[in-house]
Each structure stands twice: as C-alpha cells, then as structure tokens.
Image 1 (cartoon, rainbow over the protein chains, first blue to last red):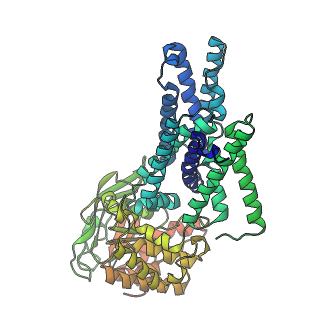
Image 2 (image 1 turned 60 degrees about the horizontal axis):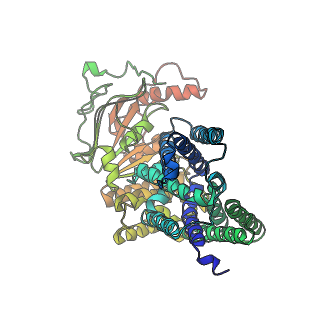
Length: 282
Length: 302
C-alpha cells in the first residue's frame, strides 16, 4: 500500500485535497456551496467550446497545446468573476444568477459534445475523464504542478487569514473596518476557480463541488474553534482523497471521482452520527 | 414618507430670525451654527450641501452639518428621514449624489480604508451564531484594516484589545464562542471591536435598542469615559430621545433636510412632535388637535 501512496496519483490527490479542504471551510461559512457548483459546471462550457474549436481547427487535437485546459480555465475564471460581481452588489439575485450560469454552461457543454459526436462519430477525447476524473496516467510533472498550486492556495489563505475570516464572518463590517472586502471577495473566487480547474482532472467536473463542501462541513460538525476547523477539514479531505484512491487502485473499475466523494460522504455520515449521539463540540 | 414641518410658533429661515438662541437659525437650508459649549474646535466631520437619492427618490437634501472634534452629535428623526443613509454615507458605504463629506480632511471611503479613523457600531449587527470564532478573535478583527494586508496585528493594539475587554467586562468570555453570548454581552463585544483600532470618529447606530435601562446607563457612562480617553468624536443616531439628549453636545433633527442643529436644551417640543407625527400616525396613534406649544421638552442631562 505504501508504494501506492508515493505515486504521482497520490501526490496529486493529496495536494488537491488539502487545497479544496482549506477553501471548503470558507465555502461553507460563506454559504457559497452553490457558487462552487456554478464554477465547476462552467468547466463544461469551457470544454464544450474547446471541442467545437477542435472541429473547426483539427490541428488543435494533434498539437501539444492544452487547449481544453486553457478554455476550461478561461471559462472558470470568467464565470467566477461574473458570479462575484453579481453576488457582491446583488443586482441580480445570486441564486438565480448562479443557476443561470450553471445550467447554461451544462447545456452548452452537452450541446457541443453532441455536435462533436455527430461530426466525428465519437465522444471527445477525455469525455469520461472530464465527467468523473482520471488519475491513472498522471505525470510527475502534473503532480508537481498541482502540489505547487495547492501550496499557493494554502499560502494565500495563511497570509490573508484575518481578511478572509472577517469577510466570511461579516463582509459589511469588514469593509467598514478598512478591509478591502471586494478584493478578498474576488480573490477567493479566483482561488476557487483555480482549484476547480485542477480538480476536474481528478474528481471530474460533476463531483468536484463535493470536495469544496464536504471537508468543511465535516470539520464544522466536529469543532467550533477556527484553527481546529481547518486542521480537521484538511484531515477529512486527505482521508477522502486517499481512501478513494486506494479503493480505485484495489477495484480499478471504480472511477476515482465517485470513489473520493463517496468516501467523504461516509466520513460525513459517521461524523454526524457520532456528533449527534455523543461528542460535544470542542 | 418625509413630512414638511411648518409651525406658526417657529420662525422660518427666510425670515432670518433666530429663536432667541445666540447664533443658531432654524432652517431647511444652510444653517449658521454657534460654537458649542466645548469651544470652537475644528470640525472632524464636515458635510457641505449634501444630497443623496436612491434613483429618483431623494433621501437627503441640501444637508450642511459639522461635528466638532471631541464633541457628540446626536441625530434624531422619524423613520425614513435619512438617518441610516447618513450613517452609510459617513462610513463610506454610499457616495453622495451631490455635495461633500470630509472626515478628518478625507473622504469617508479613504478614512475607512485607513482602518483607524472610523469606528462603527451597526444597528442590527449580523452575527452568525454558528461561526467558529471566539470573543477575542471577534474584537481583534476590528484591527484588520489598521494592520493592513500581509501584516499581523501590532502588539500594542493587542494589549489595548485586552484592556478594552477588561473595561467592558468581557475579558472572562475571551475564549467563549460568539454564539454563546447574550444580547448585552454581544453588544459590549461589538463596541470593543468598534473601538479597538482607536478611531477618531465613533458612529453609533441605535446603540441602546434592546438594552434595559441599567444597561443603557452603563453604556452612556462608558461612551463618555472612552470619549475622554481617546478624544473621540461621536455621532449617535437614535430614536431614544432620552439617551440622545443626555449624551449629546449638539442635536441634529433630520428628516430629509436638517431641521435643527444646536444644543439639546433648546430643542423645541413642537418640532420633535411634528418630526415624529408620521410615526405616531403609522402606529395608529391619532395626533392631538394642533401642535404642541409652550415649554420645551424637559430634557435629561445637559
């Protein structure tokens, strides 16, 4: 088992789990679960656009240009910033705005996939992996990149800890106290978009929101001390990621994304039951 | 809805007569204000020809107001009269449609971003009782703007936070979750948060709402003491006439425009009655025939 934990797959899953866990605390505290959903499903829009571009410019598919990843990144960031603008000023009801982007991106992605299938008589390369994630053939370079970017997420949260906490606690008062709440708002959304793009590779676009919700929820069931909440969220995220990875390696017909999410779900249920019947919050 | 205040017992601004008070003129427009009893201190807050409207609906019109450094300005007025809007303008959350506001020589937004110019106690603080934060953390968050991004809190500021907790009687609750506090305890914690950065201006929005009489007295005494210590200037917005008149060096009666801006002792009962008549009628209390005239309101305090 140890050798499995020292592979690029394990490093990638662990790094991603830590970054998602740290952000998930803010997602849950700020009640941004639906925002996470909206950003993750916007990756469909990016992927769909990439597939249509591949039909128009067939050379793209043969090139080494990571055009799918680039367009997914563009769509994720763009959606995150638009959602940020709408939720900050509340000109459009946030739930409605996110719902509109979510379903429209999904529709666009499936439409593009349908057009691609009609023209090429096959699903786009990586379609299944895009939906549910893939971890088997990740390169060490990709693992290192994920580790570095996850480290960036953790460093940003560490450095801007008081601003992020204040904005999550009371954004209006944070602004009145001199915190640049708008900057923090968009920065957090940008970090979410970046983590979503990374996470789509492993957990898939359908299930990546779970990694942004479950670790924080589990941690908040266990503790009411902020520093402990983050530690517990990270431990829960790691347990989910590594548990899912080991399940996939043991029974390789199990897709990695659902395996991770269901492991986290089991942890959540067990935590809830234990919390409900015995442990006080600490 | 704003009401127009007309009273045969009060001179109009156009007549240019004073109300037998040295130097003050009751007006719907510009107003000459005498030096208050604390002396002719330079104004910390200076509002000039201020208009504010939400779209086409005017909320504040032609407001001229100054708050001298070290003084307490009480702002009273009926619902919908613009008090909360004035608070939002002072704290930089809204920008004037016309005119200017300067706080310590800066626009409110610039003053807010300094992190140590304005302390604010909101009317209905939104506190998530389930948020995993304790009392000490809540109070020190008030230093976040002052400390700035990428920097930690200053040790002297943290020591001052501790001293504030002790003075407000919440030091023993320092490690308690914010959600476990009573209403009065939470109020004290939020006051500490508003003061921890040692601001120059303290804006209090209905601070005595929901507090019992004893608590109100303690609150007023605390604000008076901290005001002396920090050389604070205070803007106190409230419906509570008793609290406002007992704390304030000067009172502003606000109902879209400024209808009074002078010491509490000269506040005419007739004016107060008319200012709040629409609130009384909205509550189903029929107004008596004719305006009140004669003696001023018996005021508590100064």
